[in-house]
Image (tube, rainbow, N blue to C red; front, side, top):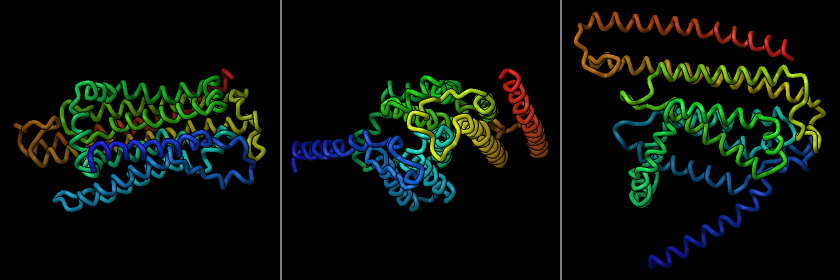
Length: 360
């Protein structure tokens, strides 16, 4: 087969896939026509969403099989994290949660929790870059991925997005902007805006948790302390917005009432439940990520001590007894910090809730 023939075949395949996918996009949000009895069976398998997810799963599986022959194997926990993260994204966009999210604010917040936090968090916790690279065909790796990775513009853009406070800003922004009532209501009635909402949330979540769970043990990587601070800021942002949405006394997201809210739930009760999802489960995801970062910090420190290195990775100049003593002191400081974080978060929850109640 000549190059021209192969190009024509690929062009025809892509055209066929797009022609099949675009109608699916138009039908992707069909909650407006569903009643309470039919919504649980409304699985929206669209090529535009399911296709890329299946493709990613196949690439990962191929890479995992190839890596299984290597001397250093990937743990089963990482494979489970990747599969569960992919499943969370699938459920958020292709299960009945998606059409239900057009008729209930609380269902929409559950969808966003899966799409913006749980899915990206598990996917990036699996640290899939190496496995996905191995899983790609050789021609694609050398002909497309390598030139793209070595591109100054692409590399610079990726490094900029991976700056800790840039990634954090985009992550928090992807929550707050789409919760503005006028913007949120527009997303409910306009499919294009709705897709933009979901895409930006997913990308922001992937960028953020890629930075949080980076495995680079290098001086230029974000320090574990900085990542802990960032996650604490994320928890505060969830607490504030969640409390504000939970304790408000007026209905803000009126687009859900165009076709009526499902199951006879009143508008205010619906939005109160959605605020609780923002507040508690959303904050819990960030707390779990914080604990994982602390565990990772201790793991790396143990590795350094075993190699006779200090916390920065430089060769220790002190005795083994002194190193062990310093390690114990650092662990006590971490334990004290954790002991302070928990009551601080509880106090903030109560304080913000009281403030919003008084203001309302």
